[in-house]
Length: 287
Image (cartoon, rainbow, N blue to C red):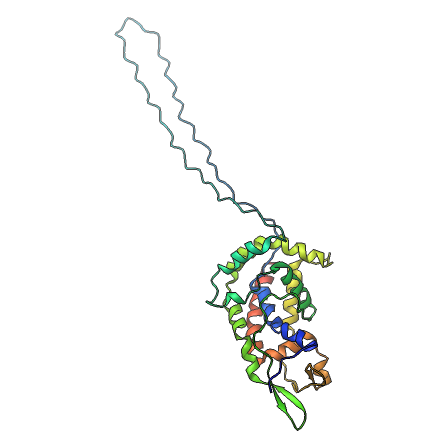
């Protein structure tokens, strides 16, 4: 049976890529080590002064034939070329940051055809809010970092027990997002997104965490995701209303992020864990 959830299930549907987003948090918006941005130094060579020629002091002539004074030729110095640094574009305001950030992101070497999955509206604010929620193992549907899934959640019905199982075909809908994340080049992204660090910190400051930086919250989000070990649980679903819930109360009581990991499928979860571990190691190495 194929069904598309609504109600509380609709929130999970639109937040369906949130566990995948955890790596976009790392791949697209990672490595913000607090540091001031400085413009490249303009190297201006100090001119080498011309050699000063000292005319020799000759003795007073005597009754001898005058000798010609030998002129000493001056040596001229050749000035070194002046290196002019390219102008540094001023950082846009938060409200005007989308066009510049979109251009910087989409010109990177993504796997062909996948960059269109990135939501390019309210990019900084959406990412910061998503990171904050994931650090608490929660999902947020109103601040998408990537475009929503375009395939429905599929279940297999058991009419006898009036229960459902997740159709393994549902796991395949996450494949483009995972390949997008696996194709990200951290060093390229670092060069682009480090420039926007003040704007990320500005939005994060609005959330009311004076004791934390955005990078610290990002590391907490990573840790929360990696704390979810591969699970072997009863994934039987029931549908008392329009939304699916897990038949096992222990599974239904898991956090939103943990239940989303179940929806990803075990293979996708392992792929994301591998990527997340790499990025967390990079973050910690920059402390």
